[in-house]
Length: 322
Image (tube, rainbow, N blue to C red; front, side, top):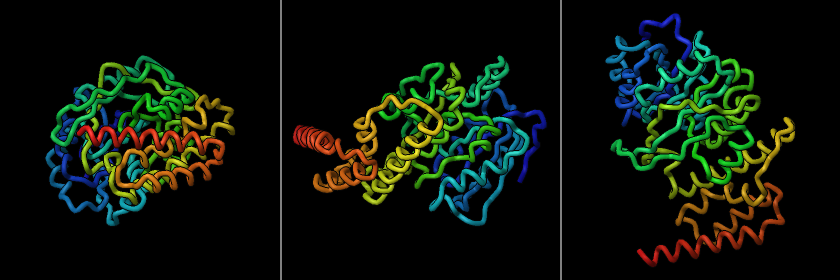
């Protein structure tokens, strides 16, 4: 199914779709944009939900290109699904990879065009976000990004948990995305967006568009919200390690200064493990030491052990109080 194509559009909004739970709210927020100068590309990852019926209701309101894929690949390789959806994009120069459950502020597209029409020389644009729950209620206002963020600062602030970042916050130039080989692959797509923003933003950094926000939905079906499934946690841990090793190599190759410490990176690397109570203390120490060995940070063993014990004691005290 294909709606009327905007021949003059410079923005492709791409949704690698699967979940139908909040899909209507997502599409509605896109259809209600104050500026409709975009094409919405939707790739259906062989969803069991009837996404097609929802999409048909909007094809006369906005330009939509829809494709239903025969094979579900997102469950084993989410990046492959993202990439095949982005391959649907035609002549647009900018790509916004969105989700099937988040919500755009009504003026996001208008703000995007207002920004690029002022001739800012950028490759990677960003919107600030609020976090909403499954019912659409705002549960957290995320600290805004600076107007300009270098890749060095982005990595440092992410590692130190000073900023949040999700894939739907960013709009990027299609030619830069292609030049850098698309999204970097990690299991569960965990860290894939961060690595890709580092590649695309290497030369000009990240610039935040003021005056518009995204509502990011935090619910039990998000990978980010899964903190009890031991297998998922270990897969996140593995992706964290792979990402940290990639950053080290990428920064060295491109002469980028890494202002974070080994301890900063280790704390961040084992963070998924420390969030959960489903691992025993001995298991947390065991897997943390495996991360240390993999990253060759063996001189930080005692420091990390003290850190884990401190957090465990803190969790126990909070548990006793409740």
